[in-house]
Structure formats: C-alpha cells, structure tokens
Image (cartoon, rainbow, N blue to C red; front, side):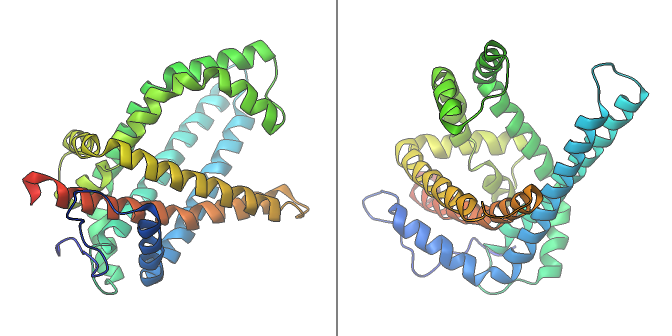
Length: 280
C-alpha cells in the first residue's frame, strides 16, 4: 500500500496546533469532490444497506410478540443475520474509502475493494467492539432514559418535550461522549497501521489524549453543522406526502454526508500523527 497521502495544500503548523475548523472542512469537501467517483457509489451502497436494516427492524418488531414462540425466535435469528451482513457491507465500504484517501489520484476501484474485502472482517470486529465499549459507557444514560420513559408512561412527543426530558439525564451521557471521542481514530489506526482491534483502540486513545480539547471543539462544530443541515433538509422535505419518501431522502442525506466525517477525521489523524514526537 502507498504511504498516507498528504495533500500539498496542507502543512503541519510549526506551533504544534491543529488546523482551524474552517480549513479542515474546506479541504474535506475538496477531497470529497476529487474522490466522488468512489464516494458516490459507496454512499449508494450504504443507503441501500441502511434500508435493508430498517426493513429487517420493522419485520422483527412486527413478528416478535410479548410471548416468545418459534416465529419470534426465527425472526430474531433473521434479524441477527441481517445485522451481521449489513455490518460486513459497511466495513467493506469504510475500508475502501479509507484506503482511497491514501491515493493521490483516482484509485483502481477493483483493486481497492479486493483489499477492502480482505480487511472487512477485522474491521467489522473493531466496529462491534468499539460500539460495545461505547454502549457500556452510555449505559447509565440509557438506564436513566428508560426510567424517565417509564415514569412518563408513553413515548416522548414534541422536540421540546424530548429536550426537556433528556436534560435531566444528559450529565450521565458525558462519560460516553468522552469515550466516543477517544475511539474516533481507531478505524484509521486499524487500516493504516495494521494494528489489532484492541491495539487500535488503545492507540486511538493515546492520540486523542494529546489533543483532546481541540478535537472536542472541532467535532462539536462538525456535529452542530450536521444537525443544522439535517433540520434544514427535514424541513425542506416536510411537504412530501408519504413518510416512506421522507425516510428515503433522510437516509440518502445521511449516506452522502457520512464520508465527510471520515475525511475530516482522516485529516485530523494525519496532523496528530505528524505532531506526535514518536512519528516525527
């Protein structure tokens, strides 16, 4: 594999600081445009992947009742198989995208996906492992939310009611949010440094710990920007008559915007690696 691509427009600052958010976002969008030949088909596959999982979720929730019978067991087994398949497909797409970011020019798509398939199973293990860790850190928040839901006796209604209810449990989510950031570079370490699953997570924590404050601020800005665009998109498609059409467009948006997060993280990963003393 070729060395990590460092675009000519980027230089590591001599003061040891990370680039500004605007610069990172601008270059992320620039790389997105240059790699669109790969990114757009990947986004289409990811959208279909999410639709398959959503369909499986709907089927299982309809099939599984309060009493567990053969039908319920078969439905759950089907759901597990679909989840495993969608994680595997997602892993192939993510490894292909991460590998493509290393190439200066247009990558050979066939060769790229062959390499991605070789790493997909290991990446899928990393995906499950990281989300299991995040789930454990978020467990107090989840338990508090369930308790609030039981107390209300019904699902939350308007956005205002949701925000009002969540605000009581939000402090319990802080440890989970911190560790989401600690694990953010694990996929880059796994693909680029060829570490094991656990080594990738530990290396990600070491890299993030050195720049935790700046990274938190940049990802918070990216998240806020994403939420703003998301609400604008949802408002603009509110006139559509069918819920299915709205869901389709919403998932299309998620699939198209997802690679921006990957590219944004890639640029930060490169900078932090360049600023780390052991890699200079």
